[in-house]
Image (cartoon, rainbow, N blue to C red; front, side, top):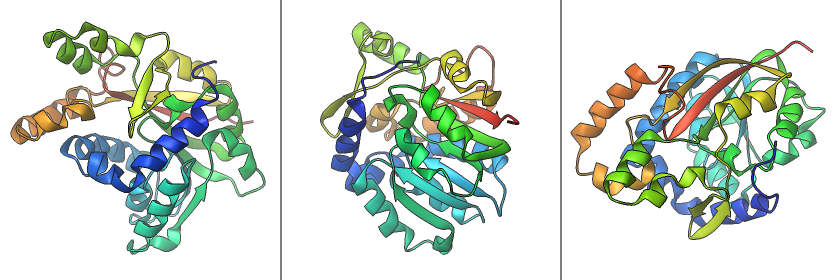
Length: 273
């Protein structure tokens, strides 16, 4: 399955190098970032158990890895951005269970370099790292060699259609922005650098991951909670954001809504070889 051009890999790494030191302030610690991440954390704690060893792809500054380590889950966290890995390592020093953390500079496309290591109990990628991939199937094939049979794999990607985004921009008379995810050559701006991305449908991701992985469930992340660019407006309406987060918790699994959030969270199980 073809998505973005392969040149997106170094371009994306360079873009995230630029924002690594400010990423937590820009997104992780923002009101919207915290709300969306809490949704993902609920699913991670349901899929992974204390004592397990988990592989994280596109780990960024290590926020998710530290969260899991503090709950008894060991994480090998990878990212293509050297600066992101450096930031993650530095911040992990203050984590009580830092011994459960390993950070590697490794692009998702190069997962085959981990061949020969122990098998992981599961794996995950949070917040759109997979949208920077040129092809999904080769990554799924490599991931299948690293995850134990039955192990859960959770992927959080930007959705092809974001209901909030369409309504937000349409009401502001910005129709091109409202439907930008349907563009033939979509891009994202990271730290002022434009990189090509791909907005996959849930069907495309599931097709790429079979026959190695069986689809288990899917849900929306940021269905009513808006995309991060709405943060300046949302900061002035904190009570509204709390209500939107509650709506998300109630509606996130609904069949007609689970694929039209800002992100979609897809859960797979490794099939028996």
